[in-house]
Image (cartoon, rainbow, N blue to C red; front, side, top):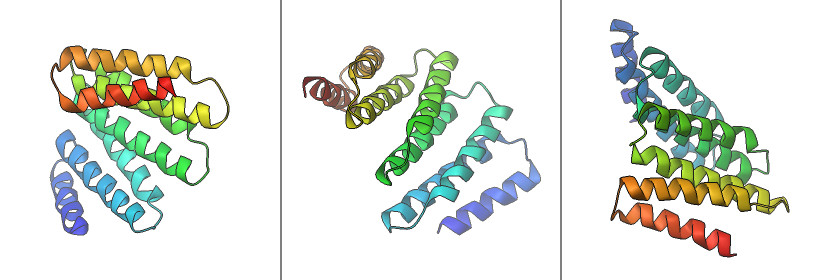
Length: 173
């Protein structure tokens, strides 16, 4: 259960509050608990925000952890999708997601998951603009550029190729 895992990480953090890995893992559990709430039609906003805080604490302790930065990008992307699904503004969340993915690439320029996540974020930003009747092509071009970086870093990866195809389809629509 979610609560048992959270409690276990809380105990670990009580012993060593500077253990970045425990903050990261706790945030991951909280984020997933939030997604489970969303799937049941409940409001996951508090859990998503708590997960953001956990990832930010982990990065404050270990600012060179590209994986945690990508996880932070994923949570902000999830927040943006949640807000968009409720008819709320998702620009801020997508912007924070892009910034976290870019941070991950600054930490490790060869980290393909960061480039892949940035591609998905930029595509979502383009979709958001398209839905408002604005021109999405600059965002789609940025998404394709990031997808090409991910492709160069992770050749012959089906997920990378699938994401690239989704972006190309959006450009063609």
